[in-house]
Length: 110
Length: 114
Image 1 (tube, rainbow over the protein chains, first blue to last red):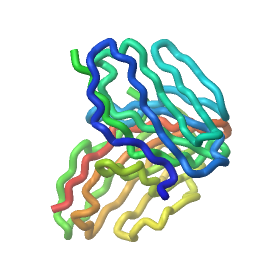
Image 2: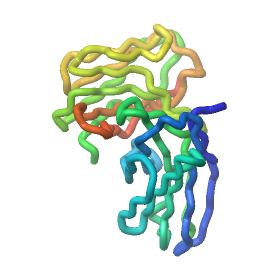
Image 3: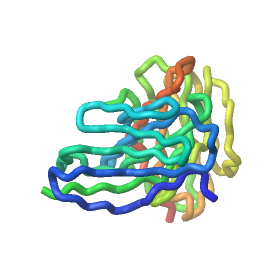
């Protein structure tokens, strides 16, 4: 079983849609959960992180962690064409040595 | 820009060539990383340098040789590569001492091995 799994997509949605991106993981000891966004021909950039369980909101983005199900989600409200990118989840036990998912490619169509 | 630069941005090399990738960070960070990113695969951590000392080497073939002359510069020396080494090579840096230890990535070098 892979340590972190993520549907590679591509996921295509119309502008204004609510987007749900998800990762599942196998190591129940993970405590730190991050979402990175990677535009074409760029490196990943940190979007949000959460510690342990719960939700975190930042503008149009909400990160959610369900440790009982070993499942994390990133929701994007009112999606824009500028949100088109690959989204990578990453997780860690102690806040270092993050394990990355393969990424989901998102396309928001105008 | 993230404060991490990489050169060259694109590199095509034959299997017998020797080349080097360069990374420079302008963030005052203490740790630097090399990752390999292949299509539809997770980022693979290759090397970690903390305070200019290599602290991790994840079973990377010896045809990849890292060098960290100071805390701002990181190199990846390449020789006798294989076509399956074609990928995006990303450099990252982080400050250490924080939790989580947030990494800042460069734009990557797209490597093609013929």
